Image (cartoon, rainbow, N blue to C red; front, side, top):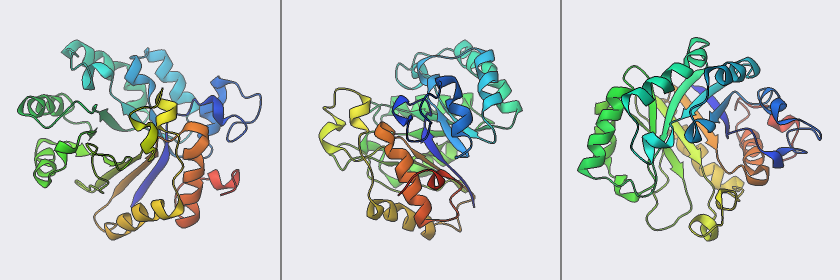
Length: 267
């Protein structure tokens, strides 16, 4: 089983003094990050489709990192992307693909994206657009929590993201999905109080998992290890460095986890 472990993004100022030494410039974050992890989610692509030179610069600084690239919000939230938009998206990412560093595309759909005939039709079109590329989809509404959905996703060539959310009504339950030997787990934190009512994303993801909570996922992975060829573990609870500490804790529990973060953190 090949494992990729990292965080949702790497450009976090509150990691200075935790992962990044005091005085580190933002332009140096990625190079330092790549010394300790082998994977990262590229979140900037959700907000803006960058220029090709920006992607070339990211590739140069990324060491041995593999990237999960988040789809632009026009593709997952507004549902307004045109064929030209997708063409531009793929074109700017060519340097990353050519370098063999693009591991997977990530489509993060919002809570309002329910399991409806219209949304299934949209996903079928998305699958055709990404044919030949690996696309993992994340749902934030419980209506997708049916076994039939998973078989349908496999049939159209999409992979389902396994998610860890707060135990709140309306959100998907935590479950490990393995499709075609591939599994992708995203840890969002379990901040019940701030998930719906936090003033911003930082508050929503202000949560550090316990060893006991991480063990539940580790045990699920061990049970399915014979079915998993490639596993992605991504922590999005990046506020206050929680994601870094949780990866350090997971390393203590799973010594083969491909990260060196335990060399700089006490956990």
